[in-house]
Amino acid sequence: MADVRPFRGIRYNPEKFNDYKSLITPPYDVIDGKYQEELYERSPHNIVRIDFGKVQPGDDDNNNRYTRAAKTFNAWLGEDVFVRDSEATLYYVEEDYKGEFDKPCTRRGFLAAVRVEDADSGVYRPHEKTLAGPKADRLNLTKATKANLSPVFSLYDDSRYEIEVAFDNRLSKRETPVIDLVSDEGTRIRMWPVTDKAVAETVSKVMESKSFFIADGHHRYETALNYRNFMAAKNPAHTGNESWNYVLMYLVNLWSEGLSVLPTHRAVFGLSGFEKSTFINTLGEYFDVEIFSEGLPAMLETLRELRGKKQTFGVAAEGGELYLISLKSGVDTSLIFAHKPPALQTLDVTLLHGLIIEKILGIDEKAQEDQLNLKYVKNADELLKRVESGEAQLGFFMNPTPVKQVKEAAETGERMPQKSTYFFPKIVTGLVLNPLFDEE
Image (cartoon, rainbow, N blue to C red; front, side):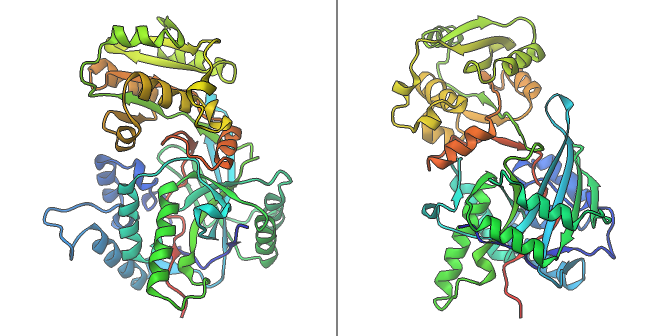
């Protein structure tokens, strides 16, 4: 099934750079204008200048963020800012971070080239819906640079830990990593290039019978699929082995103890004629509703305690008043979501989007996708501030979706609502790039 192989990656030249923190970025979709400016100022060689360059006044078809990205990418190759590895390589990555309740965690994974497959192949299993705008942006960038700049983050199912054992055996002496940095969010990231053919063979053999689940980077994966189709149409005599048939992917075992999923909360805004009292009364038809007066930290702790026991949400309404709502025992969600597979019917995110956001608040699926009345907020304190200030009319606080439920949902072939999962930490951009032009 999955075709996973080493590749000759492009990396920052270790003879010219050692402060990798000044060069890497988080994924483009979490970078706002202020952070983009900060990354620009860190280094004239920060990868943001290629992966998420600035839009300039007067941009046109001949001079824009994509043409500038291509020019910069090619210039850095020519100036040996970037160098290409001489051997096909797998890139082993360890990330030390603080998980839930500040628990020390280590996530272990590896970067590889993975053959791009059609959605109906069964090889890859997405779980979230994608939007046209980000895919168009990423496709324009890929066409310009002819490279994967940011990896797709995926999970694979290896309960025997065969791949981890192979890397452990190879790296038992723990030689010095080629990259060792601490990211802005406090994650220590280390990377080791592995050219050992025995490791590559183990990875290939284990993965050839498996599918993978996209954890983060649905837009990047579908962009890779669109780029492959674009290149195939331009090259009728293609063999299927060209580099553009593959995508840069960061792979983590879903059985890994270091795998963490955090919640993404929801902010509702701009609803015409919205009345808090009417909304709360309507909620009471489906949920047990109680005013929560002990503050946000205590409410989030209560949510955690009820995880897996009740479908429960925190709600912030006008003035910052907090509520805790739990689905009533007599409400049969299978009737409400009869058109969805059982694995999706039981998800908190399905209940929130299908019943509360769509049915009660009247924000239809198209408006949700376009984020006309809905925003996604990772920080709970930030969400409460938005409601208290009047920027948002409502805030919904969620528990994270368990990895097991993500896997079950993906296996149905149905997509979960956008931002159903937040795998933490996100894999950074700039550790290694995947060229989509073939070797000469």
